[in-house]
Image 1: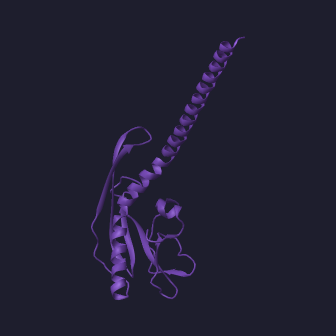
Image 2 (image 1 turned 90 degrees about the vertical axis):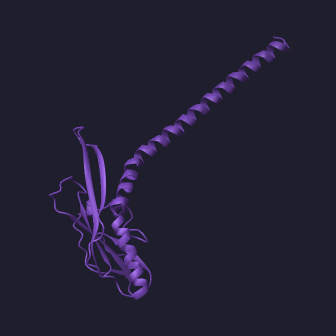
Image 3 (image 1 turned 45 degrees about the vertical axis):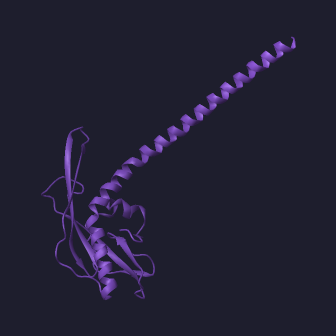
Length: 193
């Protein structure tokens, strides 16, 4: 084997190693893309539910803002008996049998008592206008010394240690069917229902 043959032999091996490295890099990129797609598909239903939930919970956000503003200016907790604006959410999809259907969910502030925002929700689980409305309470919780820190207690969850929730909880939604935000984030979340 002369020098030019040896160089040609080693050049061929270098090309083959480079090709195999490129193949390994491509396989790693495909693996990363596959994992990312899997994560996206796993999180997609939760993201859709959160988007739908934020529309249904619009009255809660409005009511919470009213309560905080009133409390900041007066030092008392708001009592308001006028029903609030009704928010409608129309969704469409397919049922288990593949039939196309449309569902209308509505939510509104039923009233505000002692700072507690009572929300009336119609059609959350079923598209049955004759079904009785469900109620969901969003209660302010304050520290025992009535400090300016206010946490919001989701549905029928208890307030955290050192806090007490105000008003009466009128939630009729079972705890295991409660809004996903309440189930995931424990009993309260600062600044969010």
